[in-house]
Image (cartoon, rainbow, N blue to C red; front, side, top):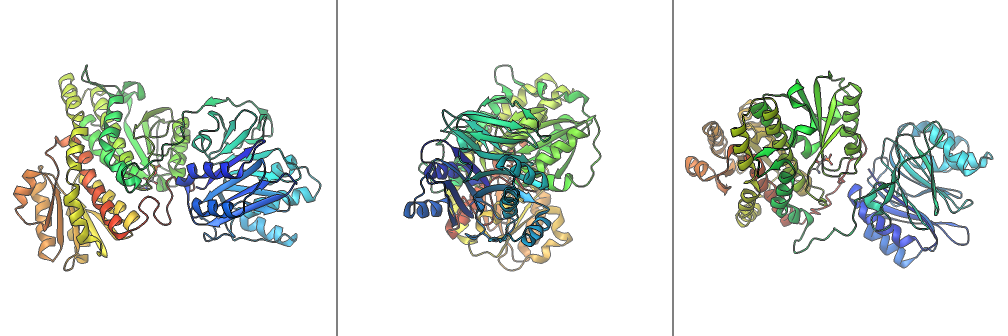
Length: 607
Ligand code: M6R
């Protein structure tokens, strides 16, 4: 889950490569580097620990000239985020950048060490540079040495290589990690995705599994895994550069929280025919003939599936099995042709979710992907795609992508209910009216921000925070805890309210914050009992509820965050907002790197 970019052209490339890396920083940001082939025939590198700005400063102090180069932004897998471990890795005239994990690197490393190669890093990737160099040493040309090296690699890789002795070309290969080739005017490009190339070219070739490519300023030749030259279509990318602007906000996450009314409205507009009062979801799946929905995702997207399970079961009487993709893909799940697989992913590149999709396809089930990036691997490989319209999400912590996923999923569930005959025309029309209210309700929920910020001050020193909810608010409790952990580094756990007594209540001591999301509903009195139980043991309860819930709770909670009264079906979308704002303000007050929290990357393209 690193980012790769390469340019082969006539003009200076170093600073442009850094621009490309900036568009890929969402994939990793613990170190970065550039390698350029100079006009004098040398290979020169600049690398820096930390974010791309550090590399930029290094290049400003010590510039690189040359018209061919490759660059990389890293998310460490093997070896700490140091300058030595930063890519590009070099061996003689060869330099490489790599995204993925080379599973047999230890065997290769031992072999190369025995052959006299000296390793400068602890990475798995460096073996690739030495493998290519060893091929050249044994008399192969770069085409042959690159292919021979790739054939020896096991694991996942997207990689690009240059050779100072054969300038004017970039060699590229992919297996398990995405890679695109860009065709420009008198320039050629490689990139982890089309966004990396946005602004340079919109003509891209998506390399397929096992493909290799040789890219020049005049075009690209592509070879399949058997070494046969193949023609891959040149597609027009819709990726646009230059969106990354925080506007009036301190952080992208804050901006993205506030963009939710629009993100949800745009997503709903895709699936709800306002005039007809109908849900446009029939073309995506033959809902009436599906026995079971198998929903798979990771992180926040997984919690979206956990919310959606309630909707599909209630509105469509459709059985739903959910699992995190990293478990699903390895547990030999029983999938039949009568099942439909639902994959949810913001990036559309999450390695485990992509693997789950491929597994379900192999098992013969139809795959439906809910994704936010139209050109992503998951979108391209799924049988049907339900797009979310969140727009680019830059903050690592998912906010607007989550509510946009919920918006798409609630529409799919209602559409499925209608197609399966569970809902009649009147019910569908009424639900269309109701879900279209969501953007307005989210706007109202955003108005609680000053109160949430006040409460956040009380939580910045917390060591542990518990999140609790029942029913559809249980996944929201899990999501709230994830959000807090990832951006504030405060330990947090989410629990089903009824489970507290079965263990977690032992964690409660004087002042332990417990965030309870519980709008007034048929289960409210049960949750209220749980609030009383933890309050009696010294917990400081922060209750996210509506006016009826606040009235019923009658000061049982230490703090109350008011959300608007909402129709039941859309409550999770609205309740997500205070949960996100609380995590955001705690982290902002603590002064953490909210948009790029430590150890994380936006897109997890390694398993
Ligand atoms: O791009 P995806 O939706 O597939 O990403 C899945 C998770 O990595 C992601 O939701 C992650 O949990 C977020 N950083 C949480 O805020």
